[in-house]
Length: 285
Ligand code: AMP
Ligand code: MN
Ligand code: MN
Ligand code: MN
Image 1 (tube, protein in one colour):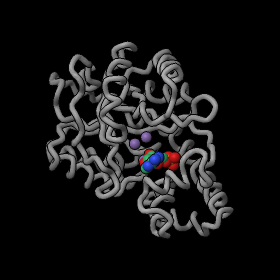
Image 2 (cartoon, rainbow, N blue to C red):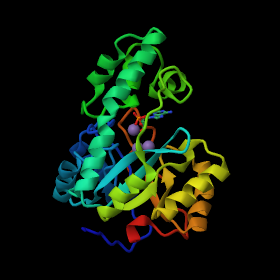
Image 3 (cartoon, rainbow, N blue to C red):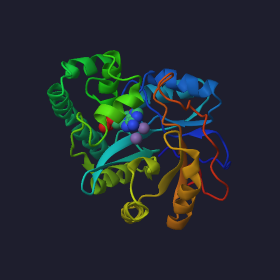
């Protein structure tokens, strides 16, 4: 494995972001160049259920002297109807069970997208499947983000965030539940590939403290090592709570912007707070 060992706690590491290979707006090379320009010192590209952008990103990072980890953000179904996002880092991206497992997860996305479109049709939004597809850089990875961009185009909401609030979030008309990977299988793929598993944006699941603890305990029992303590997709107020959880569970701490693109993400690559003191960063494992 190409483990990078860096003995600096407070380097500008951004270990969570997206490209056009999933629902980001920039190509993998553009993501790398923007990260470099923003002062990022260690980058991981973590497209949803997709590792097809890693070779391009790795080459671009090498060419501009930016340290790089392989990454992916795996969609996992947990409990009744929770979609958990597990970020995997620093794995062998040729490991066949991982490659095949991700292909299977992606394979479910097209029929899910058709079900989303059918639900939107019921509330009078036509041709959403075709509309979303026009925004997808990778037709194998149709995401709710692509639907959101189409609904903004239709003038149904001001921005992508508002589309989720009104149409696409759980409980809204265009939400459909979907079976993603199970947590044990995702963990097997990651660990078999020599990678490290991290619970992404713990603030996004709207879990009670007790349920979040139960999730973290199960994740740790399956060999999970990391918690994303700093995420561009959560508010700074939550940081002390997640830092405490990382200490309590003995997790390594990760840091990522969850950048999707200029104009759409409020937080740019590398422009996130430092890890709180006293946490062991994932890049020191
Ligand atoms: P999917 O994997 O198709 O369910 O899409 C999930 C993606 O939708 C996330 O990775 C985000 O990029 C985006 N997303 C989910 N919820 C929101 C939200 N409330 N506001 C903006 N984007 C969101
Ligand atoms: Mn996304
Ligand atoms: Mn996510
Ligand atoms: Mn993400």
